[in-house]
Length: 445
Image (cartoon, rainbow, N blue to C red; front, side):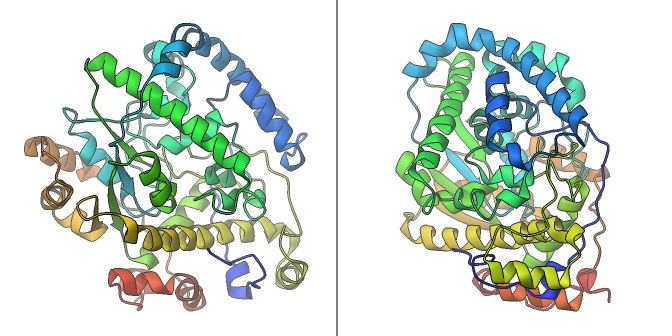
């Protein structure tokens, strides 16, 4: 899946794309903030050649201090819950929200999370600090409240420690960043050779898949324990959302035989523009340490080294170096990540959905969700055979609360970049019925 960067040369239009870099001095919302000290040391050791130690010594020192705090907060979970976690059965009927980043997965997740009578979900604190939330969530939220902003940096949507968030962030943290594509948002230069294999793990070493399954299952068990504490006798059904799961439908169906899936799609041009805007808002390239795909995947100061040559075939590296200044090499890494991730997720999803039984998968569009969220939710519940326990008044109240939310006004897409998007993402336009002409809002017309 996705040959980009594996023998395929990138032309000047692709490799020369410029990102608008912001938040150079932010020290909040870092997705690695929840590592305990041993996991932080493991992370530093694995990525030691990618860390610019002298330039970012303050950031490293800060995260080191925070990892010690996390280790202390994690002790009660370790002491009082280790046995319960080991014995905890995992429900086989979660509901997964799928879709490429920037397609509206967060909006849909927030809406369905309103059905608190039926679903349990992981919040920002739980995914950010997965080692301590069973015992110390209340204390941790007060102690670490300053670690997150009130809005997400890439789109100004509301953000708090209680906001629904992505379980993959927790898996990434628990694994020391070893087996999740999210770590490419910290070290984009490691995406091609290692992290790009961690979507469906079909080409990854067995050890990476085993590590991911171990940490993901550990986190799911902890969520289940919390749910049973709130609702004795089995807890609530898990509602999970992480865009990378879009490439894991077959794997997830094997792990959870009764799982249901909701896939949301959006005009690919809008996805590309929003994704690159997000990258610029959260990136501090050419020394990137974090790009926000979720509440805790947002800008922090970076611990990345500059790389002039890319970890690809020699002929591709020479081609890129002919059209780029060395300082732009990591921006090309980032563009590669945006393009390649979409291809991988799309191709894997289209392949895997064929094996999902009728009634276990529903597809909706972002445009439909924006226009009539109640109708879309009724469609989702109906086609999945779920009992709709959503209070329509709560849905309307939530949507009304977004009245002050304003979409970002993104830059237009140049003609040469339009061709790049079509070359790599073309099949998805046909699959989901989108025009290949640029919308007026992105063409400058």
